[in-house]
Image (cartoon, rainbow, N blue to C red; front, side, top):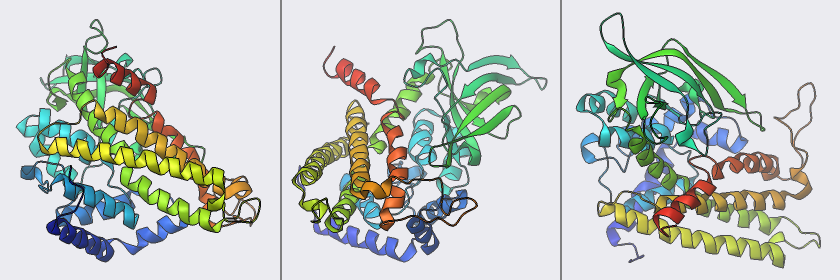
Amino acid sequence: MNLDFAPEDVAFREEVRAFIAENYPPELRGKQDEGEELSKSDFLAWHKILAKKGWVAPSWPKQWGGTGWTPTQKYIWSEEQARADTIPVLPFGISMVSPVIYTFGTEAQKEKFLKPTYDGEIWWCQGYSEPGAGSDLAGLSTRAERIVGDDGKEYYLVNGQKTWTTLAQHADWGFFLVRTDPNAKKQEGISFLLIDMKTPGITVRPLITIDGGHEVNEVFLENVKVPVENRIFEENKGWTAAKFLLAHERSGIAGVARSKRGIERLRGIASSQPSDDGEPLLNDPMFKRKVAELEIDLTALEYTELRTLAGEAQGKGPGVESSLLKIKGTEIGQRLTELVLEAAGHYGAPYFRGFPLEGGNALPIGPDFAARAPTTYFNMRKTSIFGGSNEIQRNIIAKMVLGL
């Protein structure tokens, strides 16, 4: 694997860097710098700029708007976005459900959903996890019974509950796993439905996280009528589509480029923060070793990601290596935020939900990064659970690679 950039790749990198510098919305940069919660319009602002440029979905087939970039160009694109600290394009529509639609969907489904998703006109949410089916996703119990409506058309009548549904409060559509054959084995008897979130019977309730943010939700479905034409792939074969989607999600969770940028930021913080002896924290042998070990692990993960990208260029979809990328990527991300919190020291301890405090005028103390260090640390704890817990990913590797 040649790691040297060809002249055309260097030129592409400069083009990407210039585009981001000229087009990234300054109001987004301001909100990020202040640690403000981003709105739906904030996320869509950058999405629509990229869609207009034709760069919002690099991995899609060209016929649906993909860029046709090489693996090296995709790698450069992710590196430059991380370098510029842009907000990521939300994955639910672009990199999760859309590959399912253009791989397993009908032509009518492709025509209906792909372009609006590309253009940012459809905001998607994911209805996978349930209160009793998180790591063991195949144990889901949300039911979908096939009926004939008063109009003579066939529908699924959906009843159940989903949880941890990220940003469902903004969603136009959701992709849901439902049980259509309760008598089949767990992985069999599941179907993959696209559901209009404005359908009567859907209730979205917020779950407020420890940082006071409204990122995730519970979704209740009570006698929700879903046209059969909104089912992706065959009835009772939705697990095939679900696994395909999860492989794409897990590859994206690795976050190598953003972790590299995070380590650069960590080094800058540790170079200016004093340790107990008054010397820069980065000079402390124990802390310096932790940073070095993190960099070594991230370099190994980066090469694994590059091999995966090279495989995709040869027509190989992400397979079991996506589980490896997910495990190591999330563990590295958690260690990174833990080291930032360690660098904050006692300034990271007086953490409250928002400043100034309600009814008072208290403001954060210490260096600027310290006020957000606990928030980021707490939020990153979820990454080893979502997308299939890391314990489950190890089971997949044991079965598919080691044959255990």
